[in-house]
View 1 (spheres, rainbow over the protein chains, first blue to last red):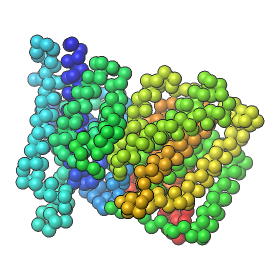
View 2: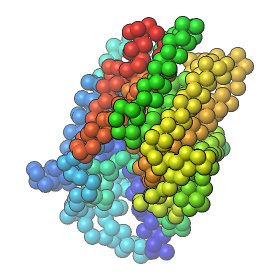
View 3: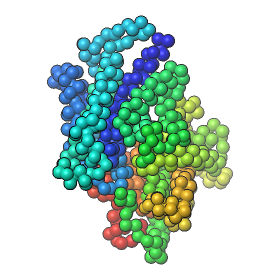
View 4: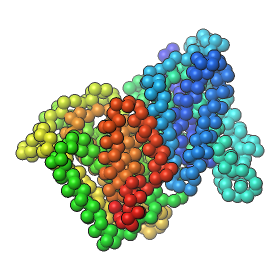
Length: 287
Length: 322
């Protein structure tokens, strides 16, 4: 049973990353109508940012949690201003191709300087060690990642669904022209939204740095799984993508325990099953 | 939403004649390659990828469906052909048929699943499906995992043509390429192709005119996947190996890149694009990961400034259909 709980925990952690990343993808898709293929590369940049902060500037994990998403978010906003904004009105496919190109550039540059092997990142002192919960041993850091990700997901949901800013955002998603007519600067909101989505990816990168080592290709395979998560959950609702993300992480963890050979593929198989049974995805909106 | 390929010229006798002239020119140029002293393996490899890109283009350029997982057909046909040739010791013609048939079967299944969603969802689904196959091939014993299947015997085609001779192999690959190319050309200009284009332009209208668009899209997907598999089977004889790189997502990305550089929805674009990208890989092989960076830069440059691709721009400049 110990092993089962351990795999469940791993599943929850992977689920937090799926949730944070698919949340960012959904937010970006809502405003920009772009599937951000560079999301995995920007997640990797978040982890590298934390690594540089610690090893070059001596800035610790807690500051990295704030600084890395901001730095990567600003980088994302520059990408949006210089490139992505020119794609509005074109077929969605071009957004996918452009961001795929951006991902190749970012990952290629990092691979040139850091190879393909992983760089270690220390767990901060306050989160070392573990707790004995009676039925299992819980490493504190892993528990922290799950709880903190949940908090961030709920906060993002609150920001978009319950605040004034979020209301503007949702309105601009539905009808940008009308919202502009009310005097709201929609292009700036689009830029900020992209920054927010990218910042969430970078935050996931910082969280994962102490668990999975910091590698140039750490986001490359992950983003494909997240795409499958997005296909399963649909991008219509914020809560939908969060719940799907966590649920798939847990299912993956359970698969690792009961049938390890299929742990790499289970999310994709589930995607096929969902497409066969309910082609519009679980949250239901057709694209 | 503006379509992927705008301002396509109508099919006129003049356009047909232009395309025929261009095709004859291409066939003659390729036929004299062995006489020029150009390294034949480079051209053979480029021809396999050119056919692959043409098959991909049939789906994206005329059906409007961007598959981000076409490497799965290349890899599947490659593995099955390689296994048939090496382990079962079958003759080359059977190896090619079995490999192509395998990707035909795969295309039926994956097509049935992926055409259930449109637009970018379709791209994400095909990408996820190819990743699923990647992991299956990584674990399946017959693919030999990271090592791949190596040292594949080339044999005698129909018991007559010795494929271990580069010149003979070259003409066999060329014949395969030209055959596949003409099949795609014929498909594009058939009534089926016209319906496909109308679905690309406006699917709801095509549905309201009574076309069962899902069947058209599935058929285009199957045709494209099967021809991509045929290219993969031919490539086995050129490279004499089948490995995981052929099923990896980065390979799918390269196929997209070739077609984009040459021109989405142009007839000759994918061929030109394939030669450019393969040549680039050859010349820049010593620069390691910078090749990836350059590919990324080409993607970005193409999407931002050069969406019609080389042949697309050329055709527009000359006001001809290419």
